[in-house]
Image (tube, rainbow, N blue to C red; front, side, top):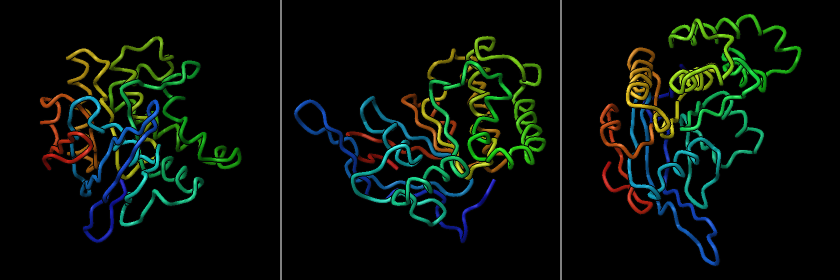
Length: 237
């Protein structure tokens, strides 16, 4: 994984505010949030439903834009970049995993992992890169215990297996940071524990920086640091 330069925070949010139109009024979701994660850090964001956890994660992942404030990655402000450059950062620098797996049903596990690279490369580039890309995707799936499931479609996989495919897909581009939004929310306790073990291993052994959103404090305790959101503000950091 890539490192941020100079010992500065890898991912940083400064004074972020975000509101949405709701009915005839405005719902203020984030009210001036400051947040950061160091290179190799593992931070959990906790809070009740509606506290702004997922909104904050989506802003960090460039899936939405703040009304005010800034988002920085590796010392560079990224929320104000052009749409093309934001798309590029999402494809190469930031991996994202959600509660819903978002796997493409017509693709097998290996092809789902390769999907971000299909988007990144032109046809000519893909023809040159496909051997290395397929090896990298296969190695990730084998590492996650899915070596025997490479050509299984999502409907043939368990929930835990589908989430591991989703994590492999998020990592195939070797991002700087992994953002995980309730990644165990759809899983039974045993499968969820396995996913958390996988995330902890990636952080500990690979030095992958991780930001994990959860409402469950027992899950949050697996991280190195906990940040609590309440009513759109950081309550405990």
